[in-house]
Amino acid sequence: MIPGMKHMDMVYGGAFCTVIAASGEDANAGVPGMGSLPQYKLYTSEVHPGIKLMLSQGMDTHLKRTQYYTRAWTFQGYFLSPPRIGFDKHQVYYLCRSNAWSEEEEEIRDWGISNDGSVMPMLQSYWKNIKTHIHDAIMTILFYYTDRQLS
Image 1: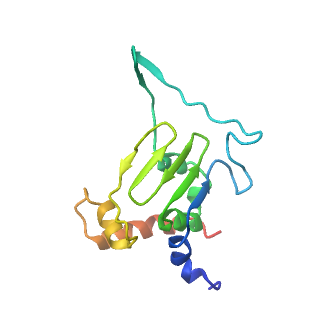
Image 2: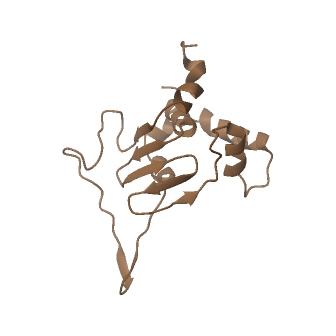
Image 3: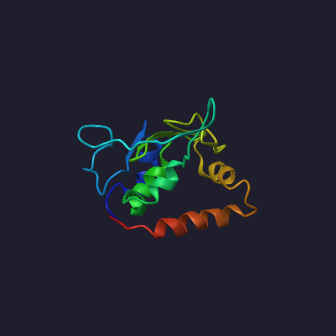
């Protein structure tokens, strides 16, 4: 095992903030809206005077289409880091243990994750609407983790 790998939970858990640049094929792709990369245009439609609608999806939806999503290392960082700032081609997201925000939305969802950072309350709150044992929830996480590339 590479020295330090068994301590990645402490590395990510102790991070002040993890930056997720998920808009390209690798870490050198850059951030849309910065430099020469164009920013993705968000479209709204006024359905009634003063009422606009916009199709919006959370960061998870956009991440599933990226190289970032396929790697085991970045999965750990995404799951274990307390605060995260994510950049994809659509917008910027701020995610912490209790909420998630994006550029155009005030609040995407309330995850109800505990502030103490422990894994058990986090998993129990994440799957609060699913009637399953915590063991099954952990097995689900491991299932998705093992599907990623160890690069």
